[in-house]
Length: 133
Image (cartoon, rainbow, N blue to C red):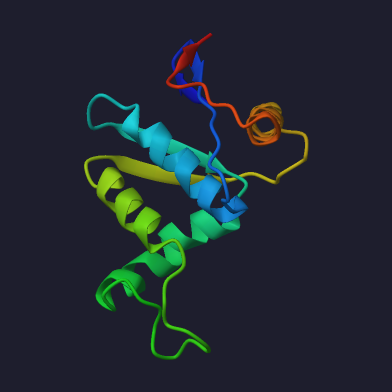
């Protein structure tokens, strides 16, 4: 969902053989791609993976050449590296504020996004752009 003043738009989509984390990242990426100029934006997400990735882990991943830190257990390969790099580039011209919302709770926007995401996944459909409401 994109909101500016009294204007609201929706976008939704799917990817075959994807994961929840990839689609959470893709949602933010597609929302940022829809912005026409640098702006101050609040990104509301119920994905702690996305929010913590940006606010806590991103700088370390970039400094380590887009790999997890040496102190990480297991593989140092950064999952969804392609999307993290793309998200980092898309965020650069904007001033972004991150707001976590509890998923499946009493937040109307979050419930609407969940509905759209589940429909897109179930029916394998996409909005193919912005739907203005």
